[in-house]
Amino acid sequence: MAERYLEREVKLDADDGFALPELSGFVPADGKLDTALVHLDSTYFDTAERDLLNARVTLRRREGGPTDTGWQVKLPTGDDRTEVRVPLSESSGVPKELRELTAGLRRGRGLRQLARIRSERSTYRLSDASGNLLVEVADDRVRATTFGDSTLISAWREVEVEAGSADDALIRAIVKRLRAAGARPSDSPSKLSRAVDQPAAGGGAASPVDDSTVGGIVMAYVREQRQALLDGDLELRGGFDAIHPTRVGGRRFRSTLRTYRALFDPQRAAALDAELRWYSGVLGAVRDIDVLRAHLRKTIAELPVHLVLGPVAKRVEQDLTREREQHHRTLMRALNGHRYLALLTALDDWVRDPPFTDAASRSPKHAARWADHAQQKLDRRLHNAAAHPEDAEQVHRARKAAKRARYAMELATPAVVPKLAKRRIKQTRVIQDTLGEFQDSVVAEEVLLRMGVRAGTTPGENGFTYGLIYALEQRRADESRAVVLAKLR
Image (cartoon, rainbow, N blue to C red; front, side, top):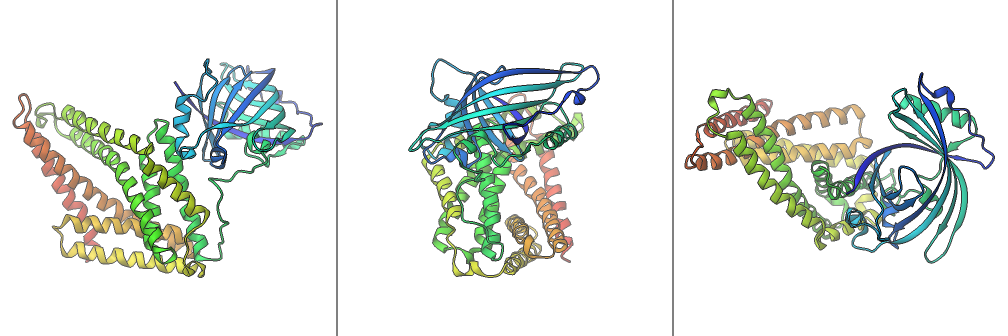
């Protein structure tokens, strides 16, 4: 079974004659400094196209270390790295769980050996009085050999400062001491990228961002959303709940295709929009259950005990959990399907070679103009909802317009006055959240009606509480709608 660790690490380069400074001054009272010398032997795997390395992901088989012998995948987590570990087995092949974890990045392509890296590592482990590891400083003398069409042999020295339970202040102090002794920030994010002479690509080869055009601003935003989708792919395959941020990344991408549609080839934009809508629907089926379940849990818990007749909480939990499991299985099947992998490939193509029209070469100020158009569309839909207060669909459409107006202003922020952008984003977020509460109640009403009808004919259950909650949801929906519409009067 794979284990998961968050790695906080600072990497420094050092010359051959670098002398590691004294570290004992960083040891806390009654703590200790342990030193050791180990020899590490790591074989790295990737596709021929280096899909993992392009996504700042490394996959290796390591031997020799006292604590990290085994298979490891390192994943980007903001400025830190998350490490997934699997013990060694008799097989020399990449373990199934790590092949599955990286399947989305590889787009179905096979893995092969990319490099072998051997390190003579001197470790300095600082622990507190209780024996808890605070920080480890590793002084590595590295030798690397790459495989493939050509062979590169290289050697260098680097120092890694990896945090245990230490706070950032201690890490900064140790790094400062090392730099004063002659170490310097590393030019390479990992040993592998240095071995193969490839800097971090941050998600694959891409055309350079041109901040002087509206197309450049749009593509910077689009790349962020593509990365959110790729990060979500790794999280979902790893068994972690990343449905909401992944869905938001796709939603922002789709919103950009629509709000800034004049910048893109219409046929390619429509095709990508359709596939993102499909994937969003698969994610949304799970996410909607999560939101509904949390919503009903809270409502039931707040009811007076004497008004909860029958196993209401248990019934809601059982039914919604079963439904979520069904949708989640559908999601996992989709992640391994041809349609999803084709979507990822399409996203790669958009980043590598955006299908721009001539309009993309306009000045950045045009981003603000399209954001204004999105705001005007929101205003129209809010007034339509006000004119038809009993039409839930009009309210839902207004909420979707609020999201698009917010995303459009997020994108256009570099081209507008910061205070204006911040205020507009905040205003649309409030509208979106308030109308979201309305939508949550509308969805809950449908489920409660179904459960209440069944409870009325099921021995040991009672439909009363479901009807009570149904009435509460109707009131909440009316209140949420009234809050937004009152501002239009």
